[in-house]
Amino acid sequence: MFGVEKGVEGASMVGALMQLVRGSTGSGAQAATGVENMLQTLIKKRGEIQEKFGVSVFDKEGKGRGLT
Image (cartoon, rainbow, N blue to C red; front, side, top):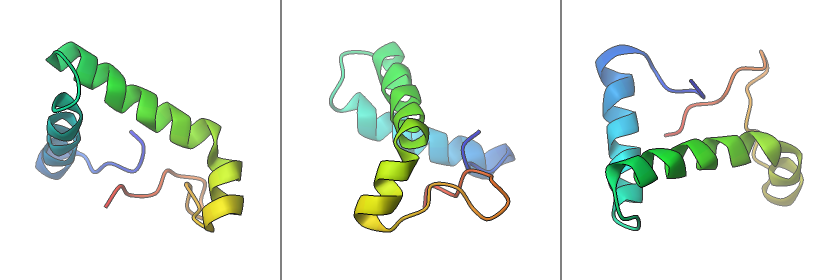
């Protein structure tokens, strides 16, 4: 998944994202959808993000960069 480690570290990161999004949504399911939408938007708008902010969403190997 988009630059997220596997195992405990990855689960912790996704859990933290879910908690952040959960604060502005009505349910855990909505939080999951919010996180999914955020990652999809990063991918979809990667060119715009690179141009506007100078941040590459993907590394040199074409893999999603870490979220931290």
